[in-house]
Image (cartoon, rainbow, N blue to C red):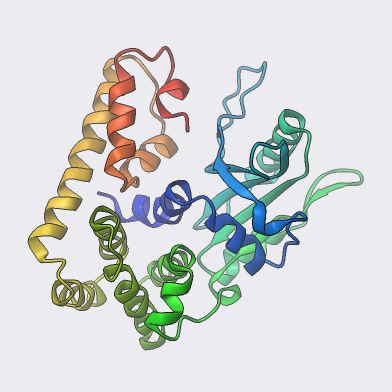
Length: 297
């Protein structure tokens, strides 16, 4: 699997599987939550934003925040960026406008960046026209809390995993530089908390996400740590091998059906570590009438 694809998709994979962590992301970014925050539920929503237009728009992740059984209160769209992309200046406003019109509530655009330069660019403001500028909320390594212990990681494990994946993404963005010792310690704290959970399938997924995103030489250190905590090398290889096999099979079948699989869609599929999600998509391939129908939330 492409390391670039996994670095991009790993944080999204965590948020798709555990969407409530988006509330922690908003708090970390300084965004005020709607009233009765303790009652809020978060659900993954349709990310295809195409309306009556020949142009296809698809955000990385869209979540809707609401009270149980109630109407939407807030929509959060998450975009992961590893580098600048000038076209986003005009695409992101389309996302926000389409989602606001669809759900009739405020929309928060969160851009996930792995380095300071990309974060500065993403923060904007991005001028669209007179009196119309978009200023996204930006998550970057410097804005995330430091994970100082396994206990701290365990308190908000999903968010801690996002922190660890961001540290790994930051290291990947600095080509030729090794992961700092401080970042390595944080990731091992998170890995320790992940290996302590009772859900074996989720434990394997989190371990594989961290291991698959890491680069050498830290990857070898992390592998030894996971092996010492009962996630053996063979289990890691099998988990990652099953994921890659399912992902490549899905891409091949989509193309056989005549669906156009662009680079972004291929990266999303290859970066999805949730085997259950890949199985769901594979089940839809034979009967779906469009690519969006296969990959819908």
